[in-house]
Image 1: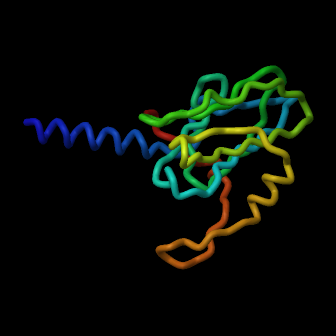
Image 2: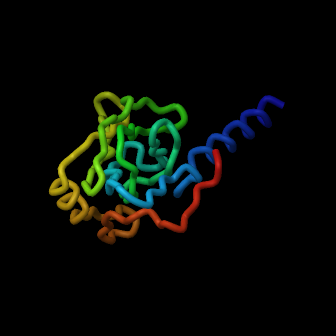
Length: 157
């Protein structure tokens, strides 16, 4: 019985960690919008898990390492953060967003602190990062960054 319970708990945790794509909270903005880009840096630490990106405390998307997303956001003060089961995070970034402006955020890891964090960065830093490639150790093929598929909807956790 104990093994069955452990197996079911393990399967549930694996399923929870595999949510990937946009959620029903994904922002929609019709006018007076800011353009936001969030990039999850390619990294080995935590590379096997998806991370939830939150907007004002609500999960808007779940991304894998090397993915990025762009979305329109209404003007005003908003908070962009991270979420995941059993992982430590900084609280996120709260700033005023202005219509017509572009904002860039980078999700990175700290091996020393064993946690993920999100920070606001300049456009040129994101542009340089998106040009980089790494070699996939399994296929030995150069792999770069990819935009989160706009048609991919995350299953509710």
